[in-house]
Every structure is written in C-alpha cells, then in structure tokens.
Length: 186
Image (cartoon, rainbow, N blue to C red):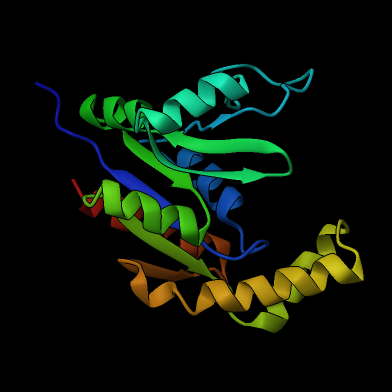
C-alpha cells in the first residue's frame, strides 16, 4: 500500500520567488509535484489541458462550484480559477507530495476544507529587497509596483497563520529549508 502524500500550500508576495523555489525543489530530488488548477480562461496556443490548467467552460465550472467540488475558487478578469478537490485528494491518496502555489485567501479556504494541508509562507528579506526583485523583472509599471507592494504588506501580516515561514534571501538555503520541511512530513 502506498503511503499517503501531503498537500503543501505555498504563499507569499509576488516576486518573492515561489515559482523559482518550486522549480529548484523539484530539480533537487525532492519528490513533489505541482497542483494543476482549473480555469475558464481560454487556453493559449502553447498551453496543454491537464498540464498548465484544466480548462473548463463557464457552465462546467459553475457546476463544480454548486456541487462543492472545489477547495477554493475566485473570479478574476472575467474568468474563474479554482482548485479541484478530486485532483488534490487523488494525488495525496496516491502518495504524492502536492505543492499548490496560491494566494493567502485561497490558502485560508483550502485549510478550512482540507485541514491536514501544510502551509508554508515565503517571505522576502525586506520590502526593499522585494521592490528590487519586482523592478528587476521589468514587467511592472509604477502603479502596478505600488499595488504589489501594498498587497505584499497585507500578505505578510498573515504569515503567522502559516505552519512554517521561510525567508527567501539566499535561494539555495531557502530551497533546502523547504525540502527539509517537506521530507520531515513523511
């Protein structure tokens, strides 16, 4: 019989390195897989159903909502996005350590419905360092940068509600801390 896996929720401000940490984690021998979420957004030409997202019609998604088949969902920019309960449960039951990178509101909703989820908050060494990272991306206008900073401050006030907090100052150290914590869940 396969040991049961774990759902690991990762949250943190935009630009803190969540996606980069996940990539390094999976490349460094940690047995994790990324949770694939559902959306009603149109699939882009380079995306694959079941790899990037599970693409659903608005009607299908609303049925999932009404039947309670989502651990969390939101409506953003005229599209639904959400986490399928069945996908998470089957992956965990099959023994996978499933990583879900999600915002603080989604994390709260999932923790209520999936209390065994392990929540990790990734924080920057400082707001100043976070601003440097966001500027270095070269994708932010001054207005969007200000919104991201304000959102980061809101999110960082929630980090005490997480099971584990990692400061991403040195990527290798932060990834090793995350790997060690996930492996300790076994």
